[in-house]
Image (cartoon, rainbow, N blue to C red):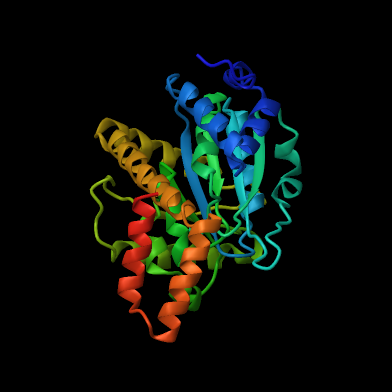
Amino acid sequence: MSDDPLFHPLLEGDRRALARAITLVESTRADHRSRATALLEALRGHGRQALRIGLSGTPGVGKSTFIEAFGMMLIGAGKRVAVLAVDPSSARTGGSILGDKTRMDLLSREPAAFIRPSPAANQLGGVARRSREAVALCEAAGFDIVLIETVGVGQSETMVARIADLFVLLLAPAGGDELQGVKRGIMEIADLILVNKADGELRATATRTVADYAGALRLLRKRPRDPEGFPKALPVSALESAGLDRAWSEMSDLVNWRRDNGHWDATRAEQAAHWFEEEVRSGLLARLDTPEARARMARLAADVASGERAALAAAREMLESLGSA
């Protein structure tokens, strides 16, 4: 039980309370961090779980169109859907456009949907700094499915696998050059590859692209968390809402198999341990962001630059000073 004013509205599924809670966990103010930590700890005891689906895709593949069509289909099936969209941030100003919500006009008006764009800031991995906590808040608010849209395709996008139960890679119909450009690292974590825009003149191209990716997936090492036939590639058309039912059926089959065979709980436990370690690392890095630490770093850096100290010895002194702080 918590006396936080957001606690009960969150458990009742209040979308405004959810938005305020996500703003709270994204804040870097010390008092907000303390309040967010207490709120998350209180909510943890309620044990609500949603299906977390990570979604990445190449630029222009139609991620927002797919999410809206897929989300509307799920809502039609009686599900509550939350979308956490991560927008790239300017390296110069740190700002983001946060335009995902405007591109999902139908879904954003649905009472059973919640869409939250967040800036990536300087966080690598395609997800925002506090995406995992935002997912936990959506689960506490009673959403059945949380879609986590990453910034885009890249080798660093694999971080979303540390949050999601399933990872879906959305790709466009193309030839072999496009297949060559997709990094092996992101292919290895994909549970399902969906080739979008399988409609109109691109339908035949999409069918060939699915076959290309299916062949590429067969070359990858078999993962113990996959049943026979997974990962697999499928054609979809977000524009025509074609293939979405089958994609959802395949996702459901994979999730059920992993639950029945112990992989679901094992993966979630591994993810929790990973994020504990990440929080410890972040806390250690935060110790460098104080006036005293910055001054000591500047002094030692000057000594190393001038040749008065070896880099290894200076680094050890800096680390020892942090350990005694």
